[in-house]
Amino acid sequence: MRKYLLWGEDMESLKRLLGFLNSLEDKKIDYKLNKIRNEAIMVEIAVPGQLWEVEFMDDGTIEIEKFINDGGFYDGEELKTLFEKFSD
Image (cartoon, rainbow, N blue to C red; front, top):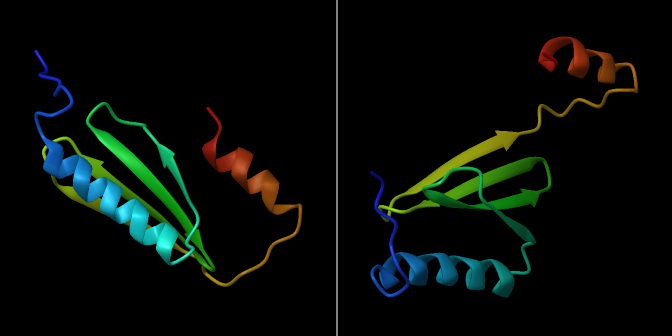
């Protein structure tokens, strides 16, 4: 059975997340919050040529995944590739 923390039980993790969000705002870096896993809050950051997914885990760890643009530009035909490769 999974244990869920109540507010106040792990304020350090919350402080780290809030500090990170405040830093992004201070530097005028746009972000979105998302939740795709039970154990994490994700901060999605889009900067020129990159997408960062920074997850603050419930155990206090941070996981970062970066998607870096290959520099290519594609026309509308590329949408076929999307559906051919990634549709059920």
